[in-house]
Image (cartoon, rainbow, N blue to C red):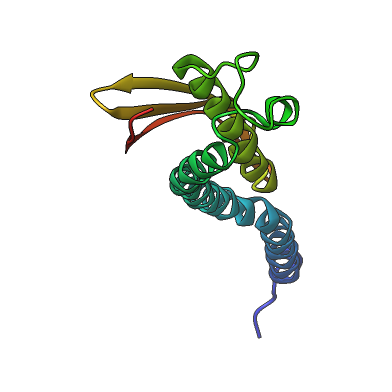
Length: 171
């Protein structure tokens, strides 16, 4: 029978022990790093979800603006062109309570800005400023809200939202 080298007999168990330790370390590393790679897709999904939410809210705000324009024109007509405060002081048209095109325009702007900002507040948007221009029997309304902040977990967007609406109406 051949004599076996004692060093050769130790090589096999040490090799198996080394492989077990190496595989255990690799498995531990995989389990630890799994949490980091899971967040990569989550951030992308948050960005896409937030973008869809922003587009939906801003589109609804633009549609609601048209409703608020017509609603404000109706309220202005109910109050004979006066604001609520002026209507209390002048229940009937008098010489002391003149009504001019500029007063009507300013009161329409006041009604519209108040009603639209109530809507914006309910949708967690910033307040909007409203500007009214008159061209060829049309009213052009410009809505502007700078720095609207949208957040979702670790994603944040800041948007300046400005849009216009036209209505055929002669003051």
